[in-house]
Length: 190
Image 1 (cartoon, rainbow, N blue to C red):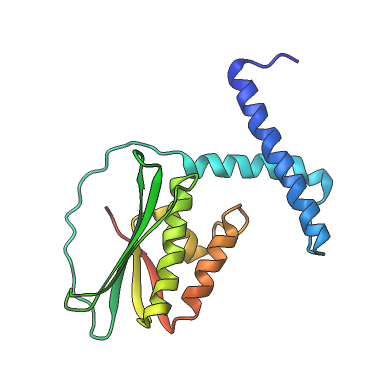
Image 2: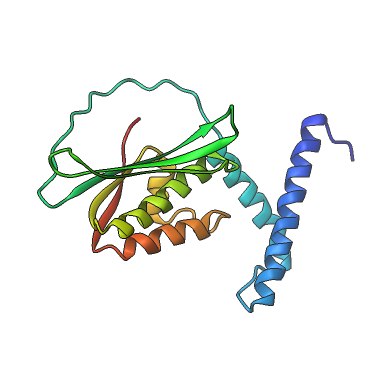
């Protein structure tokens, strides 16, 4: 079998994901969880690889500018914006959170440096997890949690990433949010 130069890279990627799937299967069997049957591992590996590539593809299409007008919140409600940032020159990343009341006044904020994650999707998910934890720490439980990653906000609202490698972080973030009496995730444009 002859594989072109691009094919070698794709074959290595598939091999790595297949090896990870086998390791994950073995781990699940060891802790007596339901594991993928061996004959399903190749198709599962291809599915994960395809899903990973689709989440990490960064299309650079310009979108028409929309005029967004800020609307005040109802009393006793908060708007919490969260985001992640990567600093390429230092190899670091950070998570930022700002909580505002219905008058637009800052009620709480957080800036936390973290090790640089492997992807922007992971960084945004870590930021979503941290904002949910932060809201419970400061006791502001009636909030709209706004992030600018539509992939992550949709995943949090619909549970789309449960079957991926990021599923455990998604479940963790949702467990923090479910402990708050009234909070929801919303997508906002940058």
